[in-house]
Image (cartoon, rainbow, N blue to C red):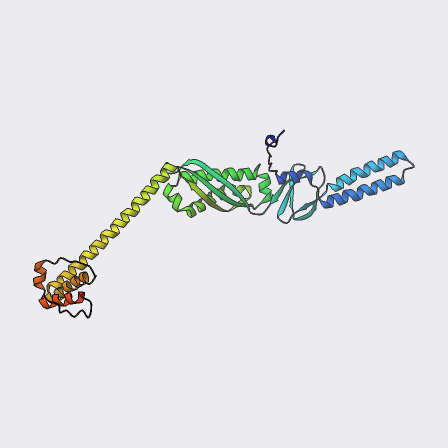
Length: 317
């Protein structure tokens, strides 16, 4: 079989809590089992003269070593073990070493008290203004009461996941698209409150909820982009109109001042003419009415400014 025909790898996520509750093997259990088993074998070997008794001692020692080997358990610093005795809740233990009665006591849950993260999503969910969106979020939560997490709900992790998804759909259905895109912090707080209310009876506390992404249909995204562009153009035109109004007001004020001061108006006209003539190679056509309003000396002075210094020519009108 070629390398291309090799079977694909399969990844299985094991339930660590369930595996540990069934096995219960730790260094202390191994030490107890080894010590008792070796002692029973040594004692049985000392009775080798009586074979039936030696076999009975060896078998009994093996059974006792197995029972005592299954008794000690070790819980990590962040773990709590929920123990049932003959089907009824007995105690909550951990961290450290604790002992159970084999086949009488049963560890039904190793509760991890650290903060956990769960991702959840809502696909093609309609907002309050009937827009289908895809929303991805992250939930940060922890077990506050291990006893209730073990006894009040069958699978607390699956229950938290479903509670988060249904809460997200409820919030999306009550929120408009614009509020969802601009007010994520408020939606995060609402989601946290709603999910925490649903998981409180299970001994679960929600630390925070964060929306990672909101995906909208491509055609709607294009329409919103065009709308935003039109809004920007509208604001630009409004700003330009406001500027024109301010300029007109300034011109009106200047006209009133020139109306009462002909000399200032004449100086302004000469300045404008000078600005136009001072550039080399420039040509300006001046109406005769404006020329008549300016004295000859002023025009001669402006003409002299156009000639290079030291050419020896006297400007004429």
